[in-house]
Image 1 (cartoon, rainbow, N blue to C red):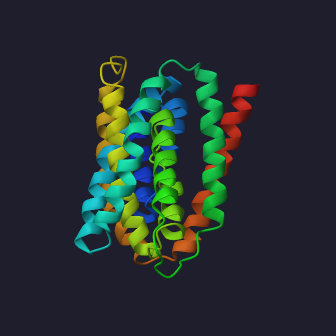
Image 2: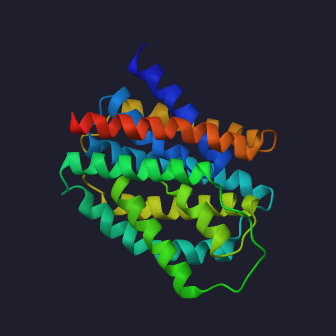
Length: 247
């Protein structure tokens, strides 16, 4: 199987998950780029931000058409993460690749744990600005440093901290992911000379198309079942990456 075919297939799967779940799918972009397409960890995190930003923006448009995006709430949440995403995005290039890989595997395992236990919906409550800002800043830092969208953290935070319904949290998380990914990309501008655009382009295109299908899938399949199945795959990837670094 050629690298181009692998890139298209991987992109389609990641886009499908991102469109259906509003997060988690992008976490697979980095290991796919490293282990299937031969990217270095540093290049993979930068390429992942490109893929995540484009795919999230597409999925955001699809969810916005159905009125499932809380624009004001999402904008405030994203604003809190913009500077942390920029700063950690700039710092990531100076971190040893083994450290990046270990940190990524830990985050992937946490993502899987979160998806095994989806956040329970709560009735709308008074928003605590400090808590919301802290959650947004933490999400931005993770996005910038590891090149992941962070939707697996954003969705529970938007439900638990800001009181959004699960459906609106999924749509709103895509706004947050898009903004944070773009902030991290701005910080990494000029450091992407080693990126293989012949693979990133098809990967991104397939992910965008997959995101549209994922949005339709979310309306037909039980969200809980979908999340648990994906969480199992994600946990296996996290363990594999950790073993690979240690061995």
